[in-house]
Image 1 (cartoon, rainbow, N blue to C red):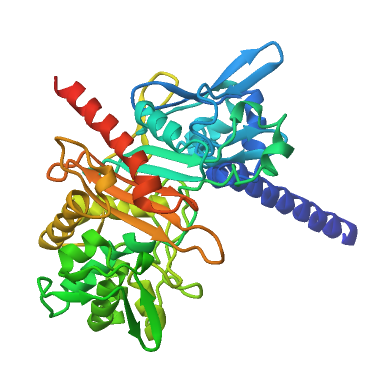
Image 2 (spheres, helix red, strand yellow):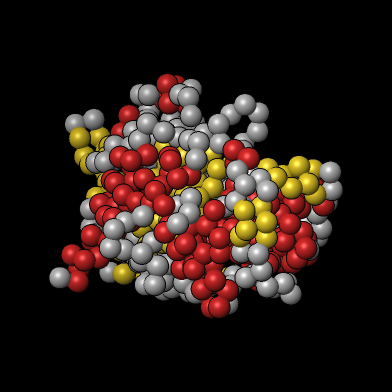
Amino acid sequence: MFMSSGIQKIALIIVFSFIFISFGLLYWQVVNADTMLDNPANRRAVLLESRIERGGIYDRNGIVLAQTKQTEKGKVRVYPHGEMFQPLLGYATVKYGSAGLEATEAANLLGMKEKSLVKKMQNTFELPRQGNDLILTLDTRLQEVAYEKLKGKAGAVVGLDPRNGEVLVLVSQPSFDGNTIVEDWDEIVNRQGSPMLNHAFAKYPPGSIMKVVTSAALFRSDFDTTELYSCQGFTIINGQTISEQNHKAHGWVNYDLALAYSCNNYFAEFGVKAGDKSFLQAAAGFGFGQSIPFDIQIPSSSITRDDPLPDKLSLNLFAASTFGQGQVMVSPFHMALITAGVANEGKIMVPRLIDRVLDSQHNIIYNYKPEVWLEALNREEADKVKSAMVLAVNEGTAAPGAIPGVQIAAKTGSAEPGGDQSTHAWYIAFAPADNPVIALAVLVENGGTGGGAAAPIAKAVIEKALELKEGVNQ
């Protein structure tokens, strides 16, 4: 009797252990499969490709950006445009795992992202099969222009349609060739300039392009933006000397002229008068300290090193922050969003890179729908910033980006990275000013002035975008 009872207990323990393990396997392999697949450290996504053919990645016009081809040596992931779209696309290897879009969208590319439990079970066990295709919002024609103009430099070009948040251009340099990632791994990871880093998502001091954000704080204070200020080439705030670039005195300027000429003293003096609370609220309105809702994770832009969006700032740090120095850090991608917000009457749309996901039968699994992320400015405020950015092109520092016959709105930035390094060159712009079809941010690391290094790149991309728009309208 005693023996029978003991055997029963052991049997029950075995049964419950089996049930527990079964539920564990069900959870990790079926219920939580998407999360596991999306983890770049998980090689299971790549190993599944022996039985699942990874779907292709295409631009908005159906041009192949990545696809799997069968060769004598087996399946090979091919990137027809070499390094033009890396490191955005990333790579998918058995030896080194995956990165970029190949990693974050592995579940979609392998057809493993069905929502119902039945579908998840089918996805887990019904092999082999074809994965899903991704149709991106990128335009290869614009990407090529940006890539060629930035080539040989370090930096990024990000272009958006301000009306709907579609990412049209996303170039990062230096880059690498995804076709030879395994063979050239050691050389690539040790190459100068961090080619595997997506510079469009990395953070840099913004310099004077931050004045677009500070503008919101000035508008919401009680002073008159038409009021004149005498720029002497430098000013002293709380014992800290704030100088203009090359110590140039701009003379009498109002808000429009201060933005057009990029007057640090004006924005520091009036920014401090508006108060750090107003400045920090404006920064929050533009998305500082927040996660950007995007297909790939992007570091949050920050006002200080210790706190992305603090409750208050010391006076000296605050004064420097108003014109994008101090400890302010922002990504080129976020600056493109901020620029797009000004272009879109103050509304920043949710950025989107993936337009559609198609299954092997070309059925639409996912279709992008535009939505607003932030309302950074009201329409009147956005018009004021636009007017000053137009003046910057027509009479100010942004003139090198001007295009005959088309009104551009733009702002330059020359950000000091610290030490003896040359300034980072920034240029943000949208066009046409009154009916924008593209908004972009260009960064050239240690490039010098925004007008000299970044403006010609932005100009070339805008010219191509307008040419393509005219082609559609003909």
